[in-house]
Amino acid sequence: MTHTAEPATRQPEQPEQPAYPFRFFDLEVARATRVGPHMIRIAFTGDDLRRFANGGFDQRVKLFLPHPGQDTPVVPVDAGENWFGAWSALPPDERAVMRTYTIRESRAPEEVDIDFALHGDTGPASRWAQAARPGDRVTVLGPAVADNAGVDFRPPAGTDWVLIAADETGLPAAEGILAGLPAGLPAFAWLSVPHQDDMRHLTTKADATVRWFVRHAADPLPGAVAAAELPAEGRAYAWIAGESGMVRAVRRNLVAVRGIDRKSIVFTGYWRRGATDDDLVAEALAGGDPHRAEDD
Image 1 (cartoon, rainbow, N blue to C red):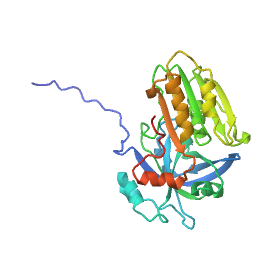
Image 2: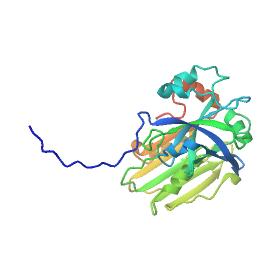
Image 3: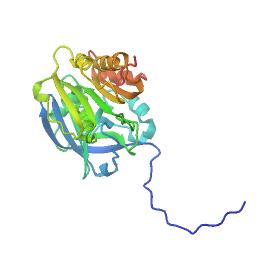
């Protein structure tokens, strides 16, 4: 078979796409701002953040922090896709402290915000955030392409209404989600925080109902969602994040009682009552996913 040659045309140059959708970014603290009694917002800056491809409203990243006495975190950046095995093989008191966080906002030129929920001096990330000063160095494993596995909030076309349930650890992502929802979309947000001064004004174009709860001994979100009047019709999409027990309870109500399709519910346990950050890291080292609440 012969083919007639087509006139040569110049195709627009396409940006180089990395084979691995994440890359390491060397960043430093630009400033730290209290946004509530239990929250610090830290702005990070770095020359190569122009290559940071924020993929969504709840973009997760791995944040690596130095131990006391270290100027920079020890991270095997040269290991590429095999970084986790190389990192876990390092002595615990040498390898960087690794935690998972959500990008609150990314801005030009070359700046990203991460909100740190504070729990006193109970964890190394909380201690680091409270002492952070401009120039302090960190490493971030972040997105090199926008369509990446670090984004969970992906409502399909035809979604009629959205439900958001989160405690303070999920608040940065919930705030970003609400800010990005289209005008007029019905949205229902239930948010719990440790103190009333942790509440904040949330900007959204959606037709949103936002309810705040101050958490004491137990999280009130499961009961509040169970008692809520939600649309009986239409295609729902739910996003739940925070303490694992709360996440499971809210999801169970949505599926078993309200009949919402499991596939329309995204849920993530950012922490677990009774478990330390180091416990969760140990689970990750053992091959588990401590940030994914159990699927009932």
